[in-house]
Length: 85
Image (cartoon, rainbow, N blue to C red; front, side, top):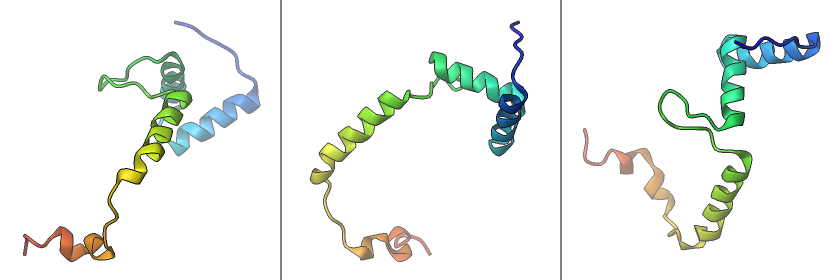
């Protein structure tokens, strides 16, 4: 087990962010460290790094010209549920 002392303002910010994510501070800090280290979470997936996410989105943008344009009607509720009552 590792214990560290944080400056009060850093601890307060972590507590605020943990609360915003619905987590206690210990679980939130652990998730941040796991993410920074590229450790997989309980479901076997790891959070992509900022660089990996940027490459993913740049690739999406580069290939977006190949996505067909759909009419507005394709996004109406009726079109999603046309086979249901």
